[in-house]
Amino acid sequence: MWEHEYTSETALAPEAIWTVLRDLDNWARWDTSMEVVELLGAFEVGSKVSMTPIGQEPIVSEITGIRENEYYADRTEFGGVVLDFSHTLERLADGGTRVVHRLEITGPEADTLGAELGPAITEDFPEAMAALLKAASGV
Image (cartoon, rainbow, N blue to C red; front, side):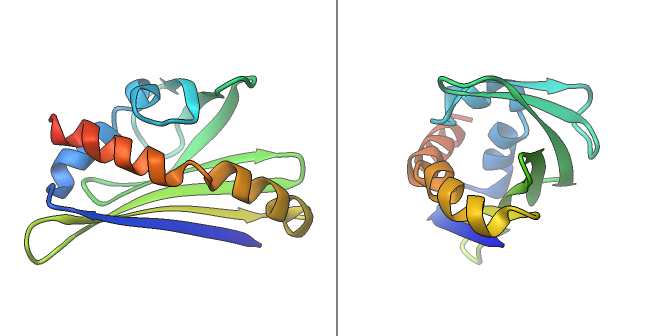
């Protein structure tokens, strides 16, 4: 298994961040690694999401977790690995939010491919988080 988390705190309320996070069709406006993101169906667990990373072919992920204003997760499986991405929004005592963006890589090839893929996938987490919070500040 390979895992990585990136955490940021903001004065924004979880609801403002959630509004941007749940709008999957507009993720490419702030997610620095995506050309196109398209929700294929309803925003619910089990629905598919087509994601086209910059310069790559589309991949299809499945939504694996949703808790309004608190949590979004999706899973992508390919080439002997499972990539579980999540965004957790924790309300702080001052009304702000701690945001945790996490990637966990598992599967038969996780030890080999995780160490190779993980850092490449997560290198833009800081920029993507900053862009998410900037987009949420305009909500």
